[in-house]
Structures are given as C-alpha cells and as structure tokens.
Length: 186
Image (cartoon, rainbow, N blue to C red; front, side, top):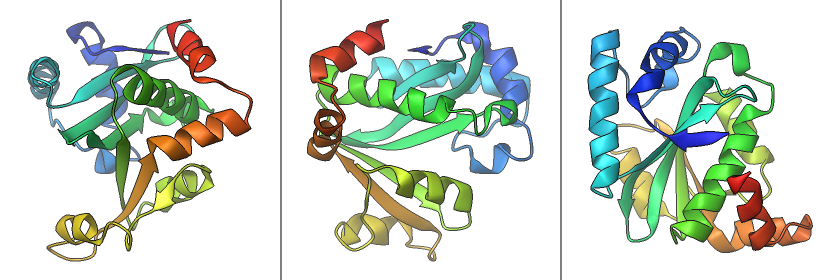
C-alpha cells in the first residue's frame, strides 16, 4: 500500500497531480514533469536528513496513485500532507494509506503528534478529517500553531492526531499495535 518515494513513479504521479481537482490542494506543486522529478529528488534527500517522511500510495496492483507525507518534523510532531489522483477519490484508499502511515509514524518512528492543516475552502478534506474518531480540531487547543498558520489571514483549520487518541481508537476497534504493524508489513 505504501512505499518509500523513488524516481520510478514520477511520470504516473505527475499526471495524477496536475488534475484540476487535485493540483490546488497539493503542498509540493510542480508545473512541469522535470520540476516534479527535481522536487522528488529533493524530497528523498530531505527524508534522508530527517526533515520529512514521504511515501508513495499504491493501489492493490502496485501502481502509484498519490503521496502521503509528514512535513516540518519538530519535537515528535509534523504536518500531514496527502493527495490522491482523481480516479482514486472516494474509493477508500485515503483511509487505508493513512492507517498504514500512522502505524509507521507512531509505532516504528516514535512520533507523538500528527497535525493537519486544511484549507477552510476544502470542504471535502474537512468532512473526511472530522469523520475520523481520533482527530481533534485544534484551532483553540493549539492556538499558537493555528495563529502561525493563519498569520496572513484565516486560511486553514488545524487538526491534531495525538498518538494516545489513535492508540485508543485501535484498541476500541480490536486492533493491537502488534497486529497493526503486521498489517503494515503485509
């Protein structure tokens, strides 16, 4: 479902990213294929330096369909950035990818908090985030971060996924950390 980013998937990912329903919501925008390849190289190097974590989302046949990333990693926390190609919207890939990514971040890499900044105009992503039982709207509880994100005007809502909330969710749903890690490795 997830694999480390590499240059082999650039052509398919670029074609999916430039769709008008996807492109406005992608954090790392590239206006040409060459720029996308360059940006992917930079992403791989930044991961090697521990600045971010980036994975390619795959469908059941191993084809690249989007990316999931953790940006701005500091003090056991970072910001989530995810996009899927338009043909894969609404088919459950986003939740499967997030579960696998959260397993890796929390239980393998030891992160404690995942933040999501979602544009207030991106109602599709806001609805998706608010459906998740382990997500907390953090505009008030993390006011300093919220204010930083919106220093130039109210653009974003801030959401938080604390490791303890996610772990509680897994336990309530019958999954244990060991089983979840096994699912990730499958």
